[in-house]
Image (cartoon, rainbow, N blue to C red; front, top):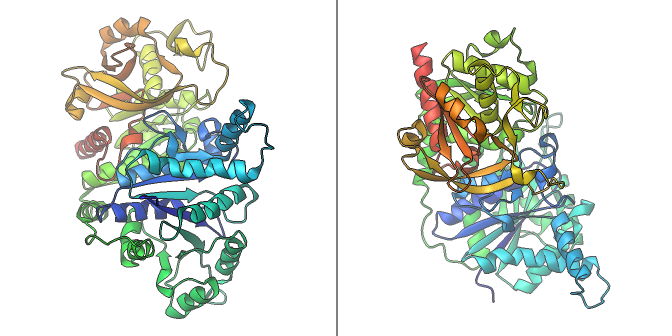
Length: 538
């Protein structure tokens, strides 16, 4: 019998109900009782990973320490559970089929006809159990993307059915997240969508063990009884999930609904002790009772979809709570910034962050915003492309290299201060070929980042192809831009700072990918502090 217990989270009625948040909330509640937990996401799309997806299509691409380009839900898992995920925590239909076809080409199926059942479902099950076998986990929570009934989800649902059979009684359960809509005209909560959703699961051979019901209204007892009767679950396994003020309230709401108790009872696991949520509650207390408030401009090219910068937005929530400060993010489209309106657009901001991205669109607006922050001593934070914009702006307006640019934007620039990495120049495939994952960085003694991190060596996550051109390093430092962080193996510049500026830092890496509720990223914490000082100064 497997020592690891497996929890499957499925969704019905509609997408975007919050399976990732429910999974992460259950994870932290189990952690709070002393159990070890990890979470994985199965995505039904055929891309190998989200690395080649447009941010408008799928939101941000979250990168793990081992260089996996994954779904943004893995960000929720890490931020809630304060643990690192990996390539094994996110699996797509594309990867499943790629693995199966690769085996077929190698002859590993010994001439058998390769089919969805058993070959595809066996590969899905192999990936389900992989984390339990590799790590010493009490629980593996597996979130199944999409909705029950979607054609592309069917192999995953079938694999869950088989996995439950393989694992035996009390070693797995299914939580089904669904919607109880409120019809204002009838002034009624409606259970029929949930009944139909559960019926589809039953047709696939799966009886949900627990129903988690999203709703904007409280679920009265008669609604709970009706759901229990028609969906064949115990009444105490009908869990209410009201719309929350913040996603960080959800673990507390699930605690009140005794979700963990239901899970432990069904899996025959001891409760151990009452959950220790003091640190979480302390975070919520600071988050909801700020003593200060700042406005920070997030300048990017995908601001119409805030999920494109999900980890940055969440990092500001963590850093704001740490500083007992409410951070209001002003989403500014870089294409809307010009030399004529930059003053009116940015003058009321306490700090400016230039967001990461790819491509030429909106780049000049970002560079103008950097110039405004530099000249007006506004706290400035540049991430990845944001750092590169800072380098280009400094080269043009301080060093006098008027045609300086990144070769990503201008391949013929006479001053390629940002250039394609040497090893990238022969690469044709786009997926999974950037500099990805955690790399070491040495911090310069006496620099601001050395003080902020309180360390001489850090490891941060990357996702890019272009780098600072070291041919210009000496010239930049001569003019006052400090190369505050470098890769110890390659000498590539990871961090730039500006002398004589209250807070001006650009990072080639993505610090937002390592900020969690219990460990806010020190750069974001320091940046918010600088924004508070700037506000008080003005």
